[in-house]
Image 1 (cartoon, rainbow, N blue to C red):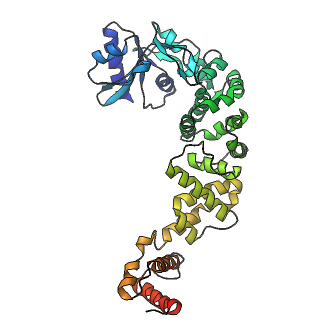
Image 2: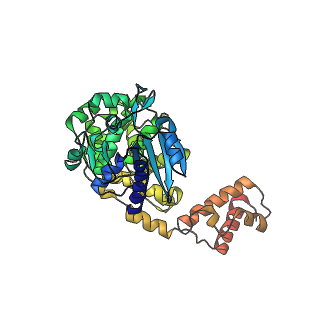
Image 3: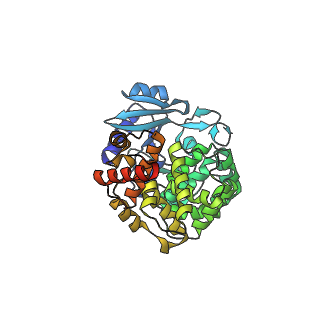
Length: 393
């Protein structure tokens, strides 16, 4: 953080020395004042993107349409953006056009929340045009200006407000929350991929329990009815632990209508969610055992257990799952010391489909502890099975 900020000051100083204005801005200033380590430093300036590219040696035009040039210095990177104003917003998400502004004030007043509308000069003096510092002190998320206008410009700001609750543990200011409730249905206009990114960020932070309760209070089911039962249930609890995919698994399990196609999960994520839901249905009235844990793996088993203990904390089987998994004699079919090719070597039997079934049987016998994973034991079992069931040796 210290070096990152120090080299950022070098960028600001370089711009100032050349007669430009330059300030640290936005989330960096917010987190700097809160004493939170940051991974991004944003700088705003009246230098145009072309001028920024000429001033600094290592740059990349990462968002030139919006006036942003990434400057690289000493292994760090900085988003340097020209003061700007924004035209009419389209599709409740992005401005139709961006114009360069002449003043810092014009740039700051287009931003979403007061705590993100702060700027800081090279001497650490805070420029606070919207009482963002006071809202930071009072731990409040408040819209800059009319919240209805802000959310109709960019409906994703609704989820950003929830994300900041999750990150900072703040409350949402009353009028801002009223506006969120009023405009919640606008989230249906936002590409689902952007929605999912924000929800994932919510669950990557510490205060998601508080956030889920606020989302319930704000009636997020207006936009996503399939999440209603899960969010309602979680809002009645004050202590639980869920990952992003576990949250969706819970919601879709309770919704009992499968995974709606509009949610654009990767194939891997879809597989995880479907496996968790299948496992919940399998063990909701039973205990985890070797065969189940072997089939689904420890991670899926722990995720299913994590959800099941939301319904009944007394049924938490986390320790048992871990112990069973550690003691499994094999973790996959390839771990069997006796394989299909061994059957072909020691017998004249050659039906590949049947051989596959025999190996599946061996796998089950070993996993459940009925046979040791020893070559001689498995060989004897197979020879006896071939003789008694197929009349072959």
